[in-house]
Amino acid sequence: LTNVPSFLYARDQEVEVAGFGKLQYDIAYGGNFYAIVPIDRVGIEFRRENGNKFLDLGLRISDAINEQNRPVHPENPAIAVCHHIDFIAPGDSPLHWKNAMAIHPGWFDRSPCGTGTSARLAQLFALGEMSLDDVLINESWIGSIFQGRIKERTRVGNIDAIVPTITGRAWIMGEATWTLDATDPFPEGFLV
Image (cartoon, rainbow, N blue to C red; front, side, top):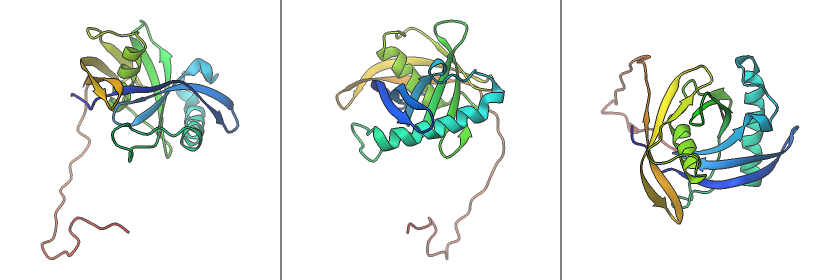
């Protein structure tokens, strides 16, 4: 899968998080904005039984970023929110990482997160920790894996960016059929 152009938005950002204190993070875009937080900065061990701790802190970090340091996409100012907190832990090699992806309003991604993997690729490339020929192994909270590669360099506004590709495995979980009644005056819904 080839994703949207992705980029490191800002390095070494800092916010005051309720009940925690000051927290430093990087923020990257891969289809959504992601605050990337190494777990050694939060003092929570990377274990499933700590899921509620990661989720609670992730929601507070998201709130703090959106109140104190809201990101704004350089080409689309309507994209101006960070609802994804990517808690990262080292894996078995410099390009193998594990993550717990806390998402507002309160759940974890079961996958390593495609757009999150794209943001992580952009961050690693911008920091000089990954080259165009490298493969990132991004492992989720539950052990599922995506491989991320950089297809090419590009720019988004005045920011250096990459075009990421993601490879992974998916399973069909269900099917649905949607029909629109020809007599429905609002077949596509409405906004209030």
